Length: 101
Image 1 (cartoon, rainbow, N blue to C red):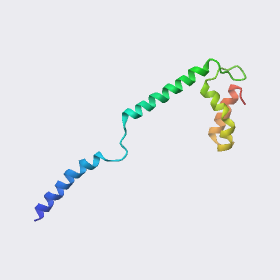
Image 2: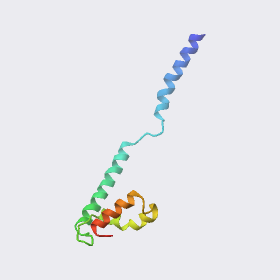
Image 3: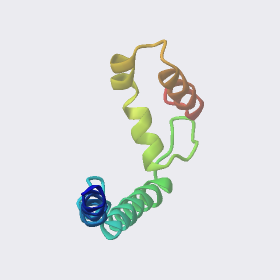
Image 4: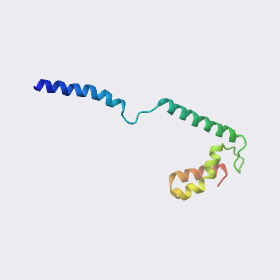
C-alpha cells in the first residue's frame, strides 16, 4: 500500500511540474521585447541626430535635442524633487555649463 502511494505521488509530481511550468507568470516574449528596444533606440537616434546640428545653447555650445529637452524640463524637475535633490543639482550644473541657467 505504501509503495502504491509513493508511486502515485511521484507520478503526480512528474506530470504536474512540467505542465505547471509552462503557465508560469513572467514569461517574456523576446521578439516583442527586441522590437520595442529597436524602436526606442531608433527614435532616440533620430531625435539626437535631428536636433544636434541646429540646437545651440545661449553660449553657442551645440546641444542635442535630448539635452535641450532636459534643460527645458529643469523647472518641472525642481518643483517635483526639490532643490536639494542630487539629480536636480546635476541637471542644474549641466544646464548651467551649456548656458541655459
